[in-house]
Length: 79
Image (cartoon, rainbow, N blue to C red; front, side):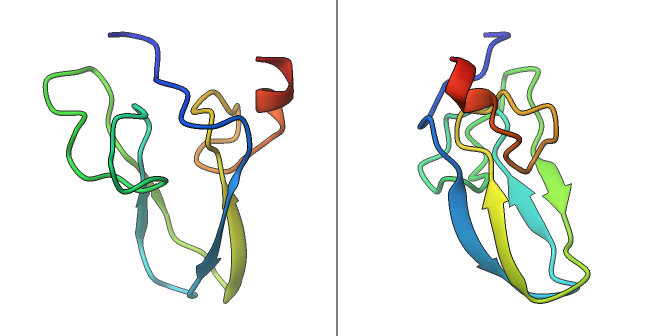
């Protein structure tokens, strides 16, 4: 598997806390989307760390094809 599974063609809107580490699922296999649960083991994929500098909402990529991983850049509109 060298192409990530598309979970959904829209971002995941998630409240985030400044300084907290979030591990985004890059493979699309996690049952805890948009975050990693270790389902990538045995593949070339690795989770991507995201650590916000302020509290707020982050829009994590759901299609797993963003050029701005782990955040959505609208790529899902072209899939």
